[in-house]
Length: 134
Image (cartoon, one colour):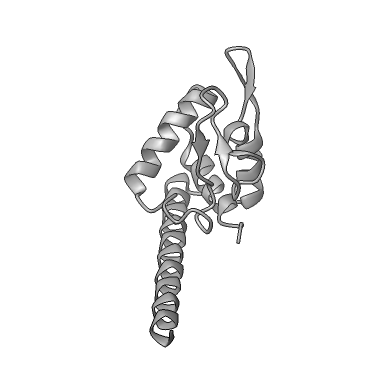
């Protein structure tokens, strides 16, 4: 019984470390976007960006359309209904773990919602916003 307790404790510690490592990766990405944008980042502006609606093919879309108003919650694709993992890295440790995948995701989804790639400031503000969820 004692061995199982130690094993569970070690497993939870490893999971916790993994989540913290990916939060750190997200923080590093935000810092990089801040440097590219030559601007300080704002969680409030990140929230505005996340919830800003844009008319696309007759539909009002925003990041929050699929990802919900709370980035720590599961989302659902507005067309396919496919489940989308939470945006907040504290809840979804894989969210910003791979910087290249994150960049591809920004490019793809910004073009879908806003018709263009988002600016470094928008990306940095967004990451700063989702990092506020604990």
